[in-house]
Amino acid sequence: MRGLSSERAPVPQDPAGASHPAHPIPFGRTPGSNGLAAGAHAVMTGVTRIFGSAVHALGPVDLELRRGEFFSIVGPSGCGKSTLLDVLAGLSAPTDGTITFEGKRVRGTVPDGVGVVFQEDASFPWLTVRDNIGFGLRRAGFRGPEAEDRVRHAIDFMGLNDFADAYPNQLSGGMRQRVCIARTLVMRPRLVLLDEPFGALDQQTRLLMGDELLRLWRASGATVLLITHALDEAAMLSDRIGVMSSRPGRFIEIVETGWPRDRTSAIAAEPAFGEVTTRLWNTLREESLKAMASQRRVAG
Amino acid sequence: MTRAGIQRLLITAAAVLALEASCRLGYVGRATMIPPSEMLAELVRLMGTDGFWSQIGFTLRNILAAAVAAMVAGFAGGVALHALPRVRRAVEPLIASYYALPFFVLYPLFIVLLGMNALPIIAMGFLYAVMAMVTATLSGLDRIPPVLRKVGRTYRLDRVQDALLIQLPAAGPHIFTGVKLALSYSVTGVIGA
Image 1: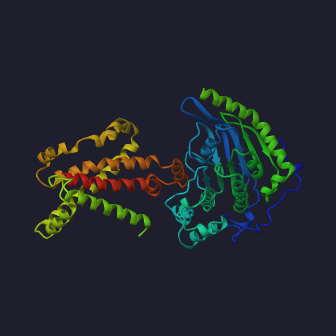
Image 2: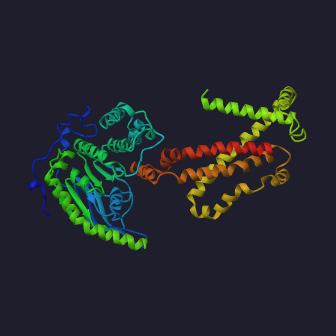
């Protein structure tokens, strides 16, 4: 598949995080680890998921996530995007096929090094922002100054300083989602799976959160897989975008954007951005119509 | 005190005064109810008599025993029914109609079975309170967002950790409501018995 990167005009870049707080790499491992490394990080081979005996939700799917890339998946409603994420995360077992993460087989349990952010508000309402973010660290046995330092940096980086001791019900939806993202990323996962994390947010907040996500991705050096309905979000954030068919979901095209690593949401003003979203829509339109027709048949 | 608090106090005082006046003016017969002021005077007199405080202590102990037993059994029953959906479907009509049962007809039976002591009284308090705790526990467990269970799995929590660190706190507000109801119902059951 032809990448689009070679045709790209220069795009706006993040001015070295000038507007962001201190602690430039709160979630990262080493400053030098941000570049794309060679090799597959996670691999799905012939993965299918069938619910019961009749609902063929996914596959067969083959996917190779490159280490350190930002990969998004778009597709019609009900095409199996979230099922794919659940299977890749180890939250559910595939009916057929294999999944490997860092060369090890994933078998229905979430492997060490994988973090997941969900579409729904998954903050713990009984814990403060600080305790929410530190939850995974405490479970993993991190105590004392290191854990406190990581949590403090995460709070700072996500702009939650004024709300560190607030409870989730005192925060907006966008802030709660930032808490969930911080809670996942503070564990320093090497593979971050995001299931429509901005689905409930307004457009402006989505753009801002997208910028934050790109910043975190660069800082962490992690591989990111994002499930989204929004074509512009996928086009803005991703190195590659997988377009899925209507159910049972399969990849019908993988689009390489060719964006530079230090991109921001300002890239949406570029003509090349329009090319990517148009291409995605052209591929997806037919599948979306099929999905709608199928849903009408079920409803009728 | 807040404005609403003052209003509540005034309304309550007015209601008591109206009741007092109704009793004094004969609108409510003495056979039905004596005036609240006489009740208060009688209460003060009783508090000075022998055995009053031991009787109060006896009642409070019974209430406490019934409430604690109902909370423990109700919570365990709620958890078990939540884990066994088929059993739950089978007993759901019983749960729904539970408080329509005339429990006090069982009191003589309890006296026969358990003797003339505190146990039949505690049993009545328990019966009144236990289902409130069962339904509150079920309600709390039903309302745990499925995504929180997924979060627990992403942190590789085992079943006990998941129950203690996620499910119990997530269901906490409903369970606490059950605790309050169980206490109230056990007061009703024990005093009634």
